[in-house]
Amino acid sequence: IGSFGMIALLTGVIGESMFEKNQLRAENSRKDSEQLITALEQEAKQLHAGLPLNEDGEASPEDVLTMAMPLIAKLFDVGVVEYTQTNLVDLVAIMDWNGSGGIDAHEFTHAICTYAAGLKPLAIQE
Image (cartoon, rainbow, N blue to C red; front, side, top):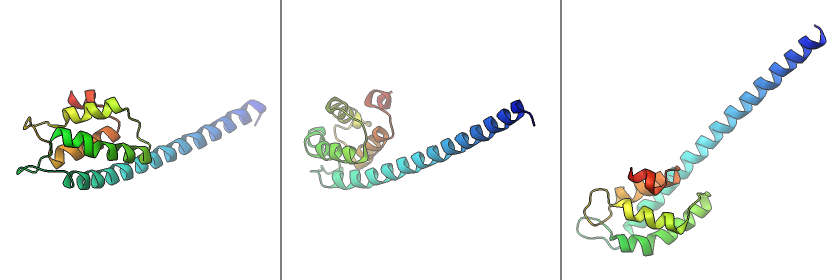
């Protein structure tokens, strides 16, 4: 093999190795994200259950905002989920998807997990 052939061979080997490393990195990132979402889902269910609930099992948006979201912010910090206070306020504003005036456990956990997965409040609302 000439020098050009050797360069081509080495380029192919290096390129394949980089591709495999990127695939492994992406797989590890996906697994980490799944674990984070699972943990957040469990924590969100527990947080919602600890809020004052009406007879339909719904919390008021005010209680969610003042009692639950500061704890969600701490969970996001631990899980390295980027957020702003405005994002959290906007998230609470769109949690009541069925228009009942309260936020049930499913609405709460779904909004928290969807946000942590990367969808911001405006995108969730759409």
